[in-house]
Length: 175
Image (tube, rainbow, N blue to C red; front, side):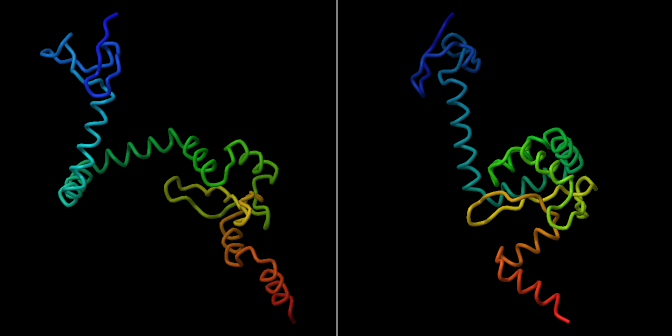
């Protein structure tokens, strides 16, 4: 098996790790595929930084020309990787897995932990009811349960302050 040393990173690699180039030694480029990719990323980034208006105009023109295909691919990608996206978001925002979420949902019988109702908010993309929101203590970051959008926003409005909630109860029960 033939190898070659990359002129950029200096690492000896097998020939398949280099792009083909007829004029190059052994018929491959002097830089490995990884280094070429990094160089191209830097060039692209520099071009975008130096020509933001031009890039914006090109992107807009491309989008307008390919709008239907882009929307179709986005939708296909969303449906294909919906579970992975949801899992990554839950992990990043709340430190729980999709399995943890589903266990909580099952233990709550699929309804809000406060009002006992299913979510009524409709997701415009899928035209189905949205998932229950993950409620957590903003101080300790501990997940408390799953709430419908209305209850989640209500708790947020009271800023998780028990005294404010008790005052609201007192207000509602006044005759």
